[in-house]
Length: 88
Image (cartoon, rainbow, N blue to C red; front, side):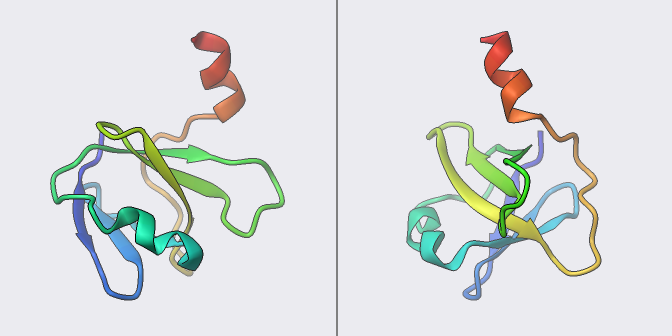
């Protein structure tokens, strides 16, 4: 699972797998306490969203909406949230 490397002042999160994620601007206050090295999961949200992914801090259980940076496809394994719920 990728780990948090850095969050810029503009709300771009870099993960250890080399991906960069734009965090929804209204959710930036929610990630102020996320520390470097935290395990972050990436899941696909419902279709049609401006922010099609959710980044979840695994230890805290806190999620924020995100999108990939322009021209970048995610390189990590994505989980369909409906399938993930069915497993629990």
